Length: 178
Image (tube, rainbow, N blue to C red; front, side, top):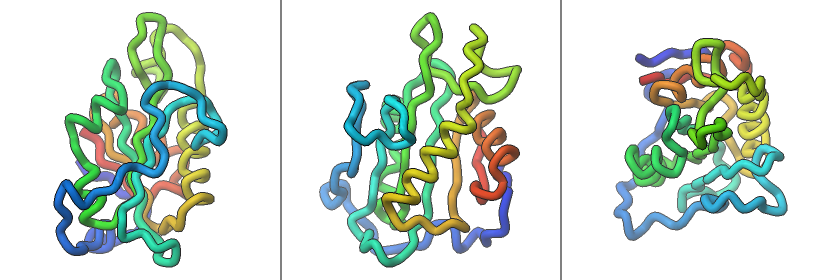
């Protein structure tokens, strides 16, 4: 299901560039997969956010931004390992971010997306506000095309994408919810 919260045309979402091989892909600009707080964390919280910036990024041309939202019990690191979207982000010139939700009492990663999913212990965390701050922080650090900001998520991550589209239609152009 593809839900558009904005007016971007489908052909403008991910422009094609020369195909990249795995060896041409440079490492992410900011990676904190260890959970160690960085001096200047993306989003302003001590949650890991992996931000990949394609090698074609020049700082002058606005780039689309894609946010991968993991499902319940699956971390962003594992989600990226399974989805492997970095090569496509490199090929298409997309800034790509993989934030982490919080962990519940049982250690399961989750997003507090709706009353139906998945804040089972009632933390009340504002993940919608957090993800907005992540997007705004990425916009402040890199040249992001404001008309092409998207989320993609599976299950709980899909619920969170819908929440972002509803709460932040001024910011999110579209979502993919699987």
